Amino acid sequence: MPNGSGKDPARWVETLIETLEDTGALTADTWREALRAVPRHLFLPLRALAVPDVPGGGKAYPIDRGARPDEWWSAVYSDTSVITQIDDGAGDPATGEGKRYTSSSSAPGVVAQFLEFLDPLGGHRVLEVGTGTGWTAGLLSYRLGSENVTTVEVDPALAEVAEKNLAAAGHTPRVIVRDGALGFPDGAPYDRVHAAFAVSSVPYAWVEQCRPGARIVFPYTPGFGYGHKVVLDVAGDGTATGRFVGPAGYMMMRAHRHPLGPQASFLHHEADAVKTGTRMDPRALAHGGPGADLAIATLVPGVRRFLGTDEDSGEATLWLLETRTDARTAGSWAVAEYIPGRGVFEVEQYGKRRLWDEVEAAYWRWHGLGRPERDQFGLTVSPDGHAVWLDSPSNVLVR
Image (cartoon, rainbow, N blue to C red; front, side, top):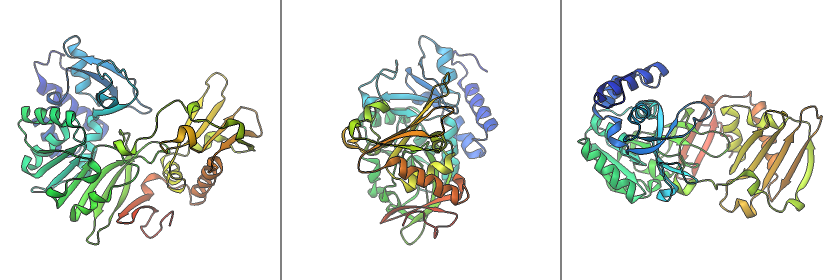
């Protein structure tokens, strides 16, 4: 690995390329060349918060190019997300102080994977939604020419910094300050759409602004479990259809954010909760894997799950909470307690919805379908909304 002085940034880039090749995130020569031509360090601040992209989530740590250059360069050219904004600018990414990460330079591995799924051809016009630091827009501009890339950012301050970063790297795509869900119709039709934030439902504007044969790639995070990569192809009838192709942990589009706070803070009207018991181990509802999570999220929309485990006692608590913005005061909730050795486990539920009952029924429906994996599911987006299906677009889970 090169030294941290930054005197040889090209060697740092090669180190990153080797890492991405080893993990299978990078296979296409076109994106290898783009990574060399558009070095990531040109798009990152001198002080920020690094979060390694590892299973279960890496531990965040501050990086400072002036004070600890070795650490800064190593983070920038490893498979690590770099947080560049917290609480929409009110927090401090240099220290990690704040409640919610709100913008970042995504880990290079997932950036490369999404670009390979996007698979643009020469001359294609691309719409990127979620400019962030501008690095992905720079990679696209190198591949296709700046005149073919439009990137949309809802935050004016982020857009301004990204435009400066891009100019310093020698690229001038069109940078638009606008809600990403609306796209940018003035630049349509597009051949490719790439979202750099997660959504819980797919904005139809993305499909509407594409020509037939176009492709849309984005992270989908309905709330139940981890997020998913999605690749859709646009048909001539105004629909887009495709598959779930892997995991994706991304920040949510601002309008789709889930409310924050400790799980216990979402419990209200506890005296009115209904108490029942279940013989089913509550932990099973969080351990079915991505296929189960996707099926449950589809069958029981608008619900998040959390599983907390005490390693010493082996006890565990499963929380089911609505994603609605007023969930802390008016949303439905359920809590199930696992205690080793018990034959029956306690369940408490409150609200208009009985979330434990709904989620348990959805789990068993997934089980009855043969426990399908994530890649057996697909998604169709139309003017009427989106529909998740199993094996074939004709086999929609919820009609």
